[in-house]
Length: 441
Image (cartoon, helix red, strand yellow):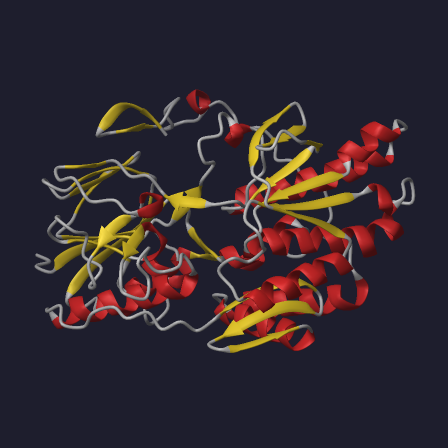
């Protein structure tokens, strides 16, 4: 019999995967649960959405990773966690029930729509590979439809892309669309003038990149201007209906495509048996060792947790580095069998790219922008990808696109409809959570 304690890890993002790599598999039986059978690299999702990279270039199969030396011995289960019973120490997915001795929650975040009714059904988001592909198809579809449209007013509405949220993701996708307007459309879409394309980046606060320095905000604004992106600050979106954005001040903007990057919230989890404490953005409150307050043998790392300190009274920033460091530190404490090393976030800096030769970087008290910042951004992201093949493919794509503005990936691929679930052998018509039969997954 296997007498090892069972550690269940929910989420194969930066935090979960680094915990699994660092925990001692000889001492513990480790089971990793994720809704996807791959690890995704979210910082480059915008490049999939803008046809700069293939989806496979920023994903890595988890079962392939399981063969690596640092993860060997871990088990993987595909499933969408629908409930956690902390009293009975059970994790429920739509497929099975997994018992645990210790639970590490690293499920990350989802989009925050700030209570705007039905907005989720109307806008385009970029939190998953599927959402990035959907946005890519939308951008290409609007360009192709506009090239065949003779109504000037309708064509301009088709070619208006509104990006809501001026954080790093919003700046990066707006910059990619700006490059499309300035460099690609004149060559590939002669049916309309590139001036008819309008890219509008809308930020509710008084400046872009609020989590970065003032110099980075100013440099990003200038670089976006060079790419003919219209930047609007101090405006909050109130509604989006029938292709019209309504702002809190009563003004409107016609846009067929709205890209939402305005905010995130912790992925909601149904937790029974004990009531955890929640912090800003629905995050689980944890102590300095990433133990969920008030629940035994329950831990949380990454964007889903809120670890408060003197430096970060609202919790650590929801970035990759805090998740990576928390996952490694928690594994070290568990391996030791005692919690005597509190988590101390080492800020390695922040960066955002606007386009080729354009980026901003903040490292400690050092700020730089432009070509050297762009090379730094590329180097850091390239080395962070899983798999040598992915690193080489992305590097070749970047080099090729830099010189050619290649259109090879700007193809509209719509998936065919799946057969009815009821017609597939061994598949139920609707998937339900075994812990809650009324909940459809």
